[in-house]
Image 1 (cartoon, rainbow, N blue to C red):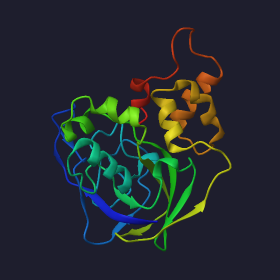
Image 2: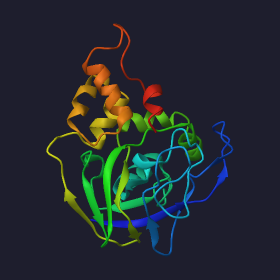
Image 3: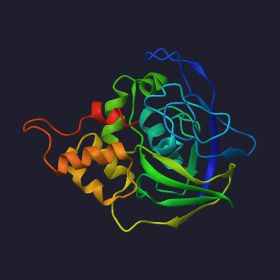
Image 4: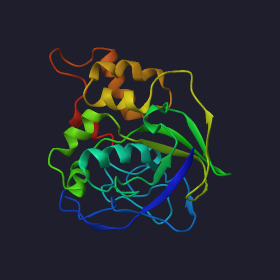
Length: 234
């Protein structure tokens, strides 16, 4: 299990959202990149030095400090879409190899290299920028149906990260709430929401949705979660 590529964004115009710029265009770094905890959402800060987000309402902050996607899943999409998908093209900071990222448990901790420790926090929810960047009509629906979202992480211990760094799983919580299950609960299968409460490391916004569903606090006939609501947790 290792980091195949460390990818840092470069600002570019964003014609797909009412935000002037986007940081989705991420390219592999040739040198080690320092990763630190960015603090609360709203400033544009993320974990990797030299990177940032521009849709500060929906991206960045403590629970979305680092985004990882598996090279194996990129290869699957490359075959399905019939196009090359280089490392970083999904906007991921870390392209991994040998790790089933979507099977990671919420709260699972990874040590990367010697010092860096990350904690799985939540899945990525696709947005209009992602669809526009890939230039694929219907991409949000297709990505959602596949339920291979990749994982966001919190920074538990700062440190540098480089391509080739080994990944070691240091802690796995005693529940079965994976990144993929969380994603399905937030998008296509809201009946799964109560099960998310087993994961104490779940971000507060998602936990609130799960509590509402579990407590039947939402009026009858109205689902407690929808892709639009879930997108607000990005």
